[in-house]
Amino acid sequence: MNEEKKYTVIVIGSSAGGFLALSALLEKLPADYPLPIIVVQHRSKDPNALFEEILQHKCRIRIKQADEKEKIVGATVYVAPPDYHLLIERDGSFSLSLEDPVKFSRPSIDILFETAAEVFRDKLIGIILTGANSDGTNGICAIKRHGGLTIAEDPEEAKYPAMPLSAIESGAVEMVLTLNKMSDFLLSELNNKISK
Image (tube, rainbow, N blue to C red):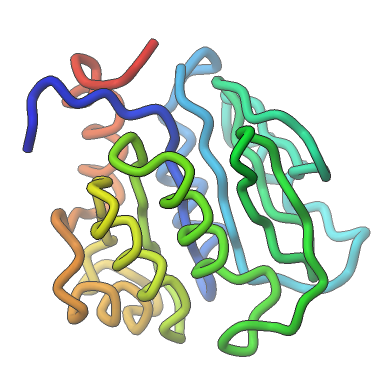
């Protein structure tokens, strides 16, 4: 890995078992963690679900639902709204879409990862967590093609290993880590590589 590389954005995909995995990964991050983190979590279509609020209680970093045309800034975890695809535009803002589900999912991890890869290229970190399908595999491949860093949760730890396994079997995952090691990596080993 290029020691001079500076990462600017992290994207995370999770599905079944994802709330607990996200909590474990994000709760160690300080409120001023410099990179924006963008999350697609497969979840209920209920707009009144309190996913962000409950996650915020466990984390110091700001958690919010991504809004249409919102500019991406650091020290924030953005979560795709229920029943909308979340895309990254060339100007670094969000776009929401009601296009058909991908792999039975809306929001789709693949769509977020693929659009983020086109915009942020080798400045992007992509992470696949627990899940019971293969959403995110195509997106991880796109991140890898564009020179980004790709990480998957250790399938032996994941509550639902199918999603990280699918990504790993694609050959596009560079690092396989437990959640504990993943958060330590984001905190310590990246300190010299992230853009502040």
